[in-house]
Image (cartoon, rainbow, N blue to C red):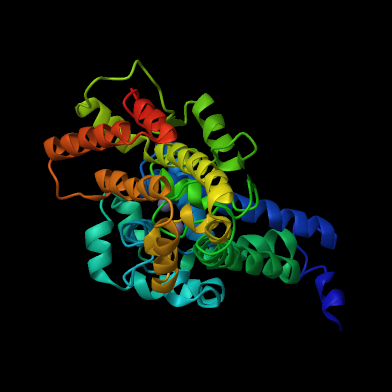
Length: 401
Ligand SMILES: [Zn+2]
Ligand SMILES: [Zn+2]
Protein backbone atom coordinates (compact mmCIF):
# COMPACT_ATOMS: atom_id res chain seq x y z
CA UNK A 1 0.00 0.00 0.00
CA UNK A 2 1.48 3.36 -1.01
CA UNK A 3 1.47 6.51 1.13
CA UNK A 4 -1.17 8.06 -1.10
CA UNK A 5 -3.40 5.03 -0.61
CA UNK A 6 -2.76 5.17 3.14
CA UNK A 7 -3.82 8.81 3.13
CA UNK A 8 -7.27 7.88 1.89
CA UNK A 9 -7.83 5.12 4.47
CA UNK A 10 -11.30 5.74 5.98
CA UNK A 11 -10.52 4.97 9.64
CA UNK A 12 -6.87 5.52 10.38
CA UNK A 13 -5.66 8.17 7.98
CA UNK A 14 -8.47 10.55 7.10
CA UNK A 15 -9.14 13.81 8.86
CA UNK A 16 -12.14 16.14 9.05
CA UNK A 17 -10.98 17.81 5.83
CA UNK A 18 -9.85 15.83 2.80
CA UNK A 19 -7.79 18.43 0.94
CA UNK A 20 -5.92 18.40 -2.35
CA UNK A 21 -2.18 19.09 -2.16
CA UNK A 22 -2.55 22.74 -3.20
CA UNK A 23 -5.32 23.34 -0.68
CA UNK A 24 -3.10 21.76 1.96
CA UNK A 25 -0.19 24.02 0.92
CA UNK A 26 -2.42 27.09 1.29
CA UNK A 27 -3.61 25.95 4.72
CA UNK A 28 0.00 25.35 5.83
CA UNK A 29 0.98 28.80 4.54
CA UNK A 30 -1.92 30.43 6.40
CA UNK A 31 -1.10 28.59 9.64
CA UNK A 32 2.60 29.44 9.45
CA UNK A 33 1.66 33.05 8.75
CA UNK A 34 -0.28 33.14 12.02
CA UNK A 35 2.92 32.01 13.76
CA UNK A 36 4.92 34.70 11.94
CA UNK A 37 2.38 37.31 13.10
CA UNK A 38 2.63 35.98 16.67
CA UNK A 39 6.44 36.26 16.61
CA UNK A 40 6.60 39.76 15.15
CA UNK A 41 3.65 41.29 17.03
CA UNK A 42 3.77 39.50 20.39
CA UNK A 43 7.35 38.33 20.95
CA UNK A 44 9.25 41.00 19.09
CA UNK A 45 7.38 44.31 19.07
CA UNK A 46 5.34 43.80 22.26
CA UNK A 47 7.45 41.69 24.62
CA UNK A 48 11.07 42.43 23.63
CA UNK A 49 10.72 46.13 22.73
CA UNK A 50 7.49 47.28 24.40
CA UNK A 51 6.57 49.25 21.28
CA UNK A 52 2.90 48.41 21.84
CA UNK A 53 0.60 47.11 24.54
CA UNK A 54 -1.66 44.15 23.82
CA UNK A 55 -5.08 43.29 25.23
CA UNK A 56 -5.26 40.00 27.17
CA UNK A 57 -7.21 38.33 24.35
CA UNK A 58 -4.57 38.52 21.56
CA UNK A 59 -1.84 38.20 24.18
CA UNK A 60 -3.08 34.82 25.46
CA UNK A 61 -3.88 33.67 21.94
CA UNK A 62 -0.35 34.44 20.70
CA UNK A 63 1.28 32.87 23.75
CA UNK A 64 -0.65 29.62 23.42
CA UNK A 65 -0.27 29.53 19.63
CA UNK A 66 3.50 30.04 19.90
CA UNK A 67 3.71 27.29 22.51
CA UNK A 68 1.87 24.91 20.18
CA UNK A 69 3.75 25.79 17.00
CA UNK A 70 7.28 26.56 18.20
CA UNK A 71 7.65 25.45 21.83
CA UNK A 72 9.55 28.70 22.44
CA UNK A 73 9.48 30.35 25.87
CA UNK A 74 8.66 34.09 25.86
CA UNK A 75 11.29 35.00 28.48
CA UNK A 76 14.03 33.19 26.55
CA UNK A 77 13.08 34.74 23.22
CA UNK A 78 12.85 38.29 24.58
CA UNK A 79 16.12 37.97 26.56
CA UNK A 80 18.13 36.55 23.64
CA UNK A 81 16.73 39.17 21.30
CA UNK A 82 17.42 42.09 23.67
CA UNK A 83 20.97 40.81 24.09
CA UNK A 84 21.31 40.78 20.28
CA UNK A 85 20.45 44.50 20.22
CA UNK A 86 22.70 45.32 23.19
CA UNK A 87 25.74 43.44 21.88
CA UNK A 88 25.07 43.70 18.14
CA UNK A 89 27.86 42.30 15.93
CA UNK A 90 30.14 41.80 18.96
CA UNK A 91 31.35 38.38 20.13
CA UNK A 92 28.62 38.32 22.80
CA UNK A 93 25.90 38.78 20.11
CA UNK A 94 24.01 35.44 20.21
CA UNK A 95 23.56 35.32 16.43
CA UNK A 96 25.68 37.70 14.36
CA UNK A 97 26.60 36.53 10.84
CA UNK A 98 29.46 39.03 11.00
CA UNK A 99 30.90 36.95 13.87
CA UNK A 100 29.67 33.41 13.14
CA UNK A 101 29.46 33.54 9.34
CA UNK A 102 26.31 33.70 7.22
CA UNK A 103 25.85 29.98 6.55
CA UNK A 104 26.16 29.13 10.27
CA UNK A 105 23.27 31.52 11.08
CA UNK A 106 21.17 30.69 8.03
CA UNK A 107 21.24 26.94 8.53
CA UNK A 108 22.19 26.64 12.21
CA UNK A 109 20.70 29.78 13.77
CA UNK A 110 18.24 27.75 15.78
CA UNK A 111 21.09 25.78 17.38
CA UNK A 112 22.73 29.03 18.54
CA UNK A 113 19.36 30.17 19.90
CA UNK A 114 18.89 26.95 21.89
CA UNK A 115 22.46 27.18 23.22
CA UNK A 116 21.88 30.78 24.38
CA UNK A 117 18.57 29.82 26.01
CA UNK A 118 20.58 27.77 28.54
CA UNK A 119 22.61 30.87 29.50
CA UNK A 120 21.11 31.80 32.90
CA UNK A 121 22.94 35.15 32.95
CA UNK A 122 21.31 36.19 29.65
CA UNK A 123 17.85 35.32 30.97
CA UNK A 124 18.39 37.17 34.23
CA UNK A 125 19.90 40.29 32.72
CA UNK A 126 17.63 40.66 29.66
CA UNK A 127 14.50 38.65 30.42
CA UNK A 128 12.71 41.17 32.66
CA UNK A 129 9.01 42.02 32.30
CA UNK A 130 8.07 38.79 30.48
CA UNK A 131 5.10 36.58 31.59
CA UNK A 132 5.61 34.75 34.85
CA UNK A 133 1.99 33.83 35.69
CA UNK A 134 0.49 30.43 36.60
CA UNK A 135 0.07 29.47 32.93
CA UNK A 136 3.70 30.24 32.17
CA UNK A 137 5.12 28.51 35.25
CA UNK A 138 2.97 25.39 35.04
CA UNK A 139 2.45 24.82 31.33
CA UNK A 140 3.90 27.09 28.63
CA UNK A 141 7.38 27.50 30.12
CA UNK A 142 7.47 24.03 31.66
CA UNK A 143 6.20 21.53 29.10
CA UNK A 144 7.63 22.96 25.90
CA UNK A 145 7.32 19.71 23.91
CA UNK A 146 3.69 19.19 24.86
CA UNK A 147 2.56 22.21 22.78
CA UNK A 148 3.83 20.92 19.41
CA UNK A 149 2.57 17.40 20.28
CA UNK A 150 -0.90 18.85 20.86
CA UNK A 151 -0.66 20.78 17.59
CA UNK A 152 0.30 17.54 15.83
CA UNK A 153 -2.76 15.75 17.23
CA UNK A 154 -5.03 18.60 16.06
CA UNK A 155 -3.40 18.64 12.59
CA UNK A 156 -3.84 14.87 12.23
CA UNK A 157 -7.48 15.06 13.34
CA UNK A 158 -8.17 17.88 10.88
CA UNK A 159 -6.20 16.74 7.82
CA UNK A 160 -5.51 13.02 8.35
CA UNK A 161 -2.30 11.31 9.45
CA UNK A 162 -0.14 11.86 6.39
CA UNK A 163 -1.29 15.39 5.52
CA UNK A 164 -1.52 16.41 9.17
CA UNK A 165 2.08 15.44 9.84
CA UNK A 166 3.19 17.34 6.73
CA UNK A 167 1.41 20.47 7.99
CA UNK A 168 2.99 20.01 11.43
CA UNK A 169 6.50 19.71 9.95
CA UNK A 170 5.93 22.93 7.95
CA UNK A 171 4.77 24.68 11.12
CA UNK A 172 7.75 23.46 13.14
CA UNK A 173 10.47 24.38 10.65
CA UNK A 174 8.98 27.74 9.57
CA UNK A 175 10.24 29.93 12.45
CA UNK A 176 13.66 28.27 12.89
CA UNK A 177 14.32 28.87 9.18
CA UNK A 178 12.70 32.27 8.49
CA UNK A 179 13.32 33.98 11.82
CA UNK A 180 16.43 32.36 13.31
CA UNK A 181 17.99 31.79 9.89
CA UNK A 182 16.87 34.38 7.34
CA UNK A 183 16.22 37.43 9.54
CA UNK A 184 19.10 36.89 11.96
CA UNK A 185 21.42 35.92 9.10
CA UNK A 186 20.53 37.74 5.88
CA UNK A 187 19.07 40.67 7.86
CA UNK A 188 22.64 41.40 8.99
CA UNK A 189 24.36 40.52 5.77
CA UNK A 190 22.60 41.30 2.52
CA UNK A 191 20.09 43.94 1.36
CA UNK A 192 19.79 47.73 1.39
CA UNK A 193 20.40 50.16 4.25
CA UNK A 194 18.32 53.29 4.81
CA UNK A 195 19.88 54.14 8.17
CA UNK A 196 23.58 54.26 8.87
CA UNK A 197 23.38 52.31 12.14
CA UNK A 198 26.63 51.04 13.67
CA UNK A 199 25.56 47.41 13.23
CA UNK A 200 25.43 45.64 9.86
CA UNK A 201 21.61 45.36 9.76
CA UNK A 202 19.90 45.46 6.36
CA UNK A 203 16.41 45.67 4.87
CA UNK A 204 16.18 42.43 2.91
CA UNK A 205 13.30 43.54 0.64
CA UNK A 206 11.01 46.60 0.90
CA UNK A 207 7.82 44.49 1.15
CA UNK A 208 7.55 42.80 4.50
CA UNK A 209 4.87 40.17 3.95
CA UNK A 210 6.32 36.66 4.13
CA UNK A 211 8.14 37.31 7.44
CA UNK A 212 5.54 39.75 8.77
CA UNK A 213 7.51 42.97 8.16
CA UNK A 214 10.67 41.70 9.84
CA UNK A 215 12.32 41.90 6.43
CA UNK A 216 12.83 45.62 7.22
CA UNK A 217 15.56 44.83 9.72
CA UNK A 218 17.75 47.92 9.20
CA UNK A 219 14.74 50.15 9.90
CA UNK A 220 14.13 48.10 13.03
CA UNK A 221 17.69 48.43 14.34
CA UNK A 222 17.61 52.20 13.72
CA UNK A 223 14.35 52.60 15.72
CA UNK A 224 14.16 49.47 17.86
CA UNK A 225 11.19 50.63 19.94
CA UNK A 226 9.02 51.56 16.96
CA UNK A 227 5.90 49.42 16.44
CA UNK A 228 6.06 50.19 12.71
CA UNK A 229 8.95 48.75 10.72
CA UNK A 230 8.35 50.40 7.33
CA UNK A 231 9.80 53.87 6.82
CA UNK A 232 9.87 54.90 3.17
CA UNK A 233 6.73 55.34 1.07
CA UNK A 234 7.55 52.26 -1.02
CA UNK A 235 8.04 49.98 1.99
CA UNK A 236 5.28 47.76 3.34
CA UNK A 237 5.04 46.17 6.78
CA UNK A 238 2.15 43.72 7.05
CA UNK A 239 2.76 43.36 10.82
CA UNK A 240 1.99 47.07 11.20
CA UNK A 241 -1.25 46.50 9.27
CA UNK A 242 -2.28 43.80 11.79
CA UNK A 243 -1.32 46.07 14.72
CA UNK A 244 -3.45 48.91 13.32
CA UNK A 245 -6.36 46.48 12.86
CA UNK A 246 -5.97 45.31 16.49
CA UNK A 247 -5.86 48.95 17.57
CA UNK A 248 -9.11 49.72 15.75
CA UNK A 249 -10.65 46.74 17.59
CA UNK A 250 -9.22 48.20 20.86
CA UNK A 251 -7.08 45.10 21.32
CA UNK A 252 -3.74 46.93 21.02
CA UNK A 253 -2.26 50.31 21.83
CA UNK A 254 0.77 51.61 19.95
CA UNK A 255 3.32 53.17 22.32
CA UNK A 256 6.00 54.36 19.93
CA UNK A 257 6.81 54.77 16.25
CA UNK A 258 9.94 56.21 14.60
CA UNK A 259 10.09 60.00 15.17
CA UNK A 260 9.41 62.48 12.35
CA UNK A 261 11.73 65.52 12.41
CA UNK A 262 10.14 68.92 13.05
CA UNK A 263 11.78 72.32 12.60
CA UNK A 264 11.49 75.82 14.08
CA UNK A 265 13.55 78.98 13.54
CA UNK A 266 17.26 78.23 14.06
CA UNK A 267 18.36 78.82 17.65
CA UNK A 268 21.26 81.24 18.14
CA UNK A 269 22.83 78.91 20.69
CA UNK A 270 22.30 75.14 21.01
CA UNK A 271 20.49 74.15 24.20
CA UNK A 272 19.25 70.96 25.87
CA UNK A 273 16.28 70.82 23.51
CA UNK A 274 18.57 70.98 20.47
CA UNK A 275 20.69 68.22 21.97
CA UNK A 276 17.63 66.03 22.60
CA UNK A 277 16.42 66.62 19.02
CA UNK A 278 19.85 65.72 17.66
CA UNK A 279 19.89 62.50 19.68
CA UNK A 280 16.36 61.60 18.57
CA UNK A 281 16.86 62.43 14.89
CA UNK A 282 20.44 61.28 14.44
CA UNK A 283 19.65 59.17 11.39
CA UNK A 284 17.89 62.06 9.67
CA UNK A 285 20.90 64.22 10.56
CA UNK A 286 23.31 61.66 9.10
CA UNK A 287 21.26 61.42 5.89
CA UNK A 288 21.23 65.23 5.53
CA UNK A 289 24.92 65.38 6.31
CA UNK A 290 25.57 62.87 3.52
CA UNK A 291 23.99 65.41 1.12
CA UNK A 292 26.34 68.16 2.37
CA UNK A 293 29.28 65.80 1.91
CA UNK A 294 28.07 64.99 -1.60
CA UNK A 295 27.73 68.69 -2.48
CA UNK A 296 31.23 69.48 -1.14
CA UNK A 297 32.60 66.51 -3.06
CA UNK A 298 31.03 67.75 -6.32
CA UNK A 299 32.46 71.25 -5.80
CA UNK A 300 35.92 69.96 -4.99
CA UNK A 301 35.94 67.46 -7.83
CA UNK A 302 35.12 70.28 -10.26
CA UNK A 303 37.94 72.42 -8.85
CA UNK A 304 40.51 69.59 -8.97
CA UNK A 305 39.54 68.68 -12.53
CA UNK A 306 40.56 72.17 -13.56
CA UNK A 307 43.76 72.46 -11.52
CA UNK A 308 44.95 68.93 -10.76
CA UNK A 309 43.36 66.23 -12.98
CA UNK A 310 45.41 63.38 -11.47
CA UNK A 311 44.16 64.20 -7.94
CA UNK A 312 40.62 64.50 -9.32
CA UNK A 313 40.90 61.01 -10.78
CA UNK A 314 42.10 59.61 -7.46
CA UNK A 315 39.28 61.30 -5.56
CA UNK A 316 36.71 60.01 -8.03
CA UNK A 317 37.82 56.42 -7.40
CA UNK A 318 37.20 56.71 -3.66
CA UNK A 319 33.82 58.48 -3.78
CA UNK A 320 31.89 55.63 -2.12
CA UNK A 321 34.33 55.36 0.77
CA UNK A 322 33.59 58.95 1.81
CA UNK A 323 30.09 57.95 2.90
CA UNK A 324 31.18 55.02 4.99
CA UNK A 325 31.97 55.17 8.69
CA UNK A 326 35.78 54.94 8.69
CA UNK A 327 35.62 52.29 11.44
CA UNK A 328 34.18 50.01 8.78
CA UNK A 329 37.13 50.59 6.44
CA UNK A 330 40.22 48.37 6.51
CA UNK A 331 43.44 49.99 7.74
CA UNK A 332 44.90 50.22 4.21
CA UNK A 333 41.64 51.70 2.85
CA UNK A 334 41.58 54.33 5.58
CA UNK A 335 45.18 55.35 4.87
CA UNK A 336 44.47 55.63 1.15
CA UNK A 337 41.39 57.77 1.82
CA UNK A 338 43.33 60.07 4.16
CA UNK A 339 46.01 60.56 1.49
CA UNK A 340 43.34 61.48 -1.06
CA UNK A 341 41.56 63.83 1.35
CA UNK A 342 44.85 65.67 1.90
CA UNK A 343 44.47 67.22 -1.58
CA UNK A 344 41.17 68.87 -0.63
CA UNK A 345 41.01 70.84 2.61
CA UNK A 346 37.22 71.54 2.46
CA UNK A 347 36.37 67.89 1.81
CA UNK A 348 38.72 66.80 4.58
CA UNK A 349 36.99 69.22 6.97
CA UNK A 350 33.49 68.01 6.07
CA UNK A 351 34.61 64.38 6.29
CA UNK A 352 36.28 64.79 9.71
CA UNK A 353 33.48 66.90 11.15
CA UNK A 354 30.99 64.10 10.56
CA UNK A 355 33.02 61.92 12.93
CA UNK A 356 33.06 64.73 15.50
CA UNK A 357 29.30 65.15 15.21
CA UNK A 358 28.70 61.44 15.70
CA UNK A 359 30.58 61.60 19.01
CA UNK A 360 27.61 63.61 20.37
CA UNK A 361 25.34 60.52 20.31
CA UNK A 362 28.00 57.89 20.75
CA UNK A 363 29.86 59.18 23.83
CA UNK A 364 27.70 57.98 26.68
CA UNK A 365 30.14 59.00 29.45
CA UNK A 366 29.84 62.78 28.83
CA UNK A 367 27.28 64.84 30.80
CA UNK A 368 24.44 66.58 28.97
CA UNK A 369 26.05 69.98 29.69
CA UNK A 370 29.28 68.80 28.06
CA UNK A 371 27.39 67.50 25.05
CA UNK A 372 25.44 70.77 24.59
CA UNK A 373 28.72 72.69 24.74
CA UNK A 374 30.31 70.27 22.27
CA UNK A 375 27.36 70.68 19.90
CA UNK A 376 27.51 74.47 20.10
CA UNK A 377 31.25 74.40 19.47
CA UNK A 378 30.70 72.13 16.47
CA UNK A 379 28.12 74.52 14.96
CA UNK A 380 30.42 77.47 15.58
CA UNK A 381 33.31 75.81 13.73
CA UNK A 382 31.05 74.61 10.92
CA UNK A 383 29.69 78.09 10.32
CA UNK A 384 33.16 79.65 10.45
CA UNK A 385 34.55 77.12 7.92
CA UNK A 386 33.50 79.08 4.84
CA UNK A 387 32.19 75.81 3.28
CA UNK A 388 28.65 76.60 2.07
CA UNK A 389 27.09 73.07 2.35
CA UNK A 390 28.50 72.75 5.88
CA UNK A 391 27.20 76.18 6.93
CA UNK A 392 23.74 75.36 5.60
CA UNK A 393 23.78 72.02 7.37
CA UNK A 394 24.74 73.61 10.69
CA UNK A 395 21.91 76.16 10.42
CA UNK A 396 19.47 73.32 9.80
CA UNK A 397 20.89 71.46 12.80
CA UNK A 398 20.15 74.40 15.07
CA UNK A 399 16.53 74.43 13.91
CA UNK A 400 15.55 70.84 14.92
CA UNK A 401 12.60 71.18 17.32
ZN1 LIG B 1 19.20 42.21 14.23
ZN1 LIG C 1 14.42 43.81 17.85
